[in-house]
Image 1 (cartoon, rainbow, N blue to C red):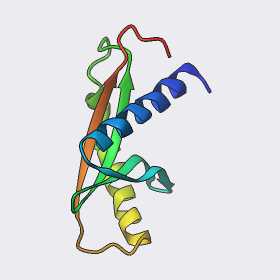
Image 2: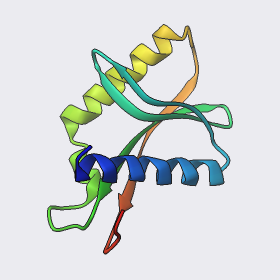
Image 3: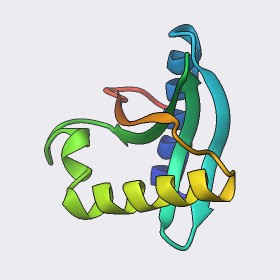
Image 4: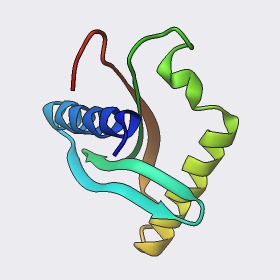
Length: 108
C-alpha cells in the first residue's frame, strides 16, 4: 500500500468512528460495482447514508470536498441506486454525505 492509500484507509477508519459517535450504524464499507465505489454505507435512524470520505494532508490543492465533482457525484448516485436495487430496498429515505478528514502534521 502506498502512502495515499494508507492515508485514505486511516481517513475511513476515522469517519466510521465519527459516524458511530453520531449514532449511525455501519452497514457496509467499500461497496464496489461497475458504476463505482462507495466508501461507507450507514444507517442514521431511518435513513440510509452513502458516505464518500476524502482525506487530505492540507488544503494546498483545495478543500477535500472539492474533489467530489459532478462526475464523482454521478458515480456515487449510480452506485447507491445499484446498492438499493441489489438489496431489494424500496422507498427508503437516503442521502449522500461527504466527510472530510484532514491530517495536518500527522504521521500515520
